[in-house]
Image (cartoon, rainbow, N blue to C red; front, side, top):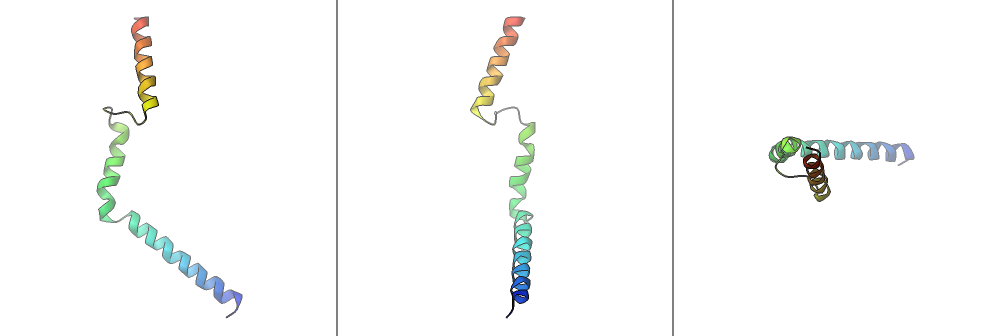
Length: 67
């Protein structure tokens, strides 16, 4: 076995790993999770992080003071 055989084997192995990851990512079991993640930017009910909530509250207070 020379170095070219080893390189070919490694390339085929990595290609199979890539195909496995793509198959896993596009499987039907993940569809619900991806649909929920796609809706996250459109949901205004809950902020993504506590810092975002604090900033939104400060902005609301500033707007009330200006009015």
